[in-house]
Length: 181
Image 1 (cartoon, rainbow, N blue to C red):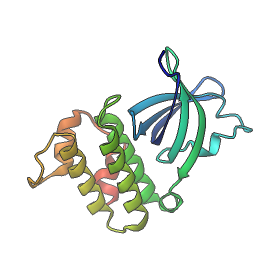
Image 2 (image 1 turned 120 degrees about the vertical axis):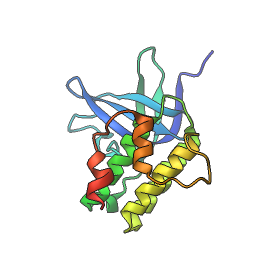
Image 3 (image 1 turned 30 degrees about the vertical axis):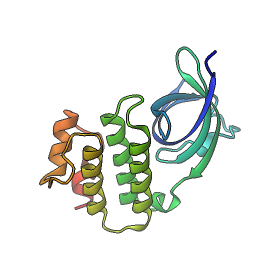
């Protein structure tokens, strides 16, 4: 018999309101890659999970498998990255990182390596002031880790390479280039 519940660590990439009180979360996990989870009742004022489920928060969670969408049963914030949330440019860049990971990965791909990359870049973002350098290194590391770019080869225009691979415009593309110049 298959296990119906599972636990992992993850970073919230995206959240969408669903129904009157629920949210669908896209979480990149250490053990399972990208997952969509239903957080029932999380938009209610009395919800204990509410404060733990912000975009780019690092969480520990448990979920229950269902035929349609797995349901989040427990959640605990490991790190909310408060320092990032106090700086508009850093917040914009953190959203950019999450959007890129969400667009370039598919469910179940590269779990621990991409999770570690995202976790590391968010840690750097908290303490670093050279935001453009962090962004360009992130793109290079992500593309090499996923096999889109040869390791060790110089990348002249990381933004252009990322755009070619994604084949679509990012919502937060202004952050990628203009906000951090």
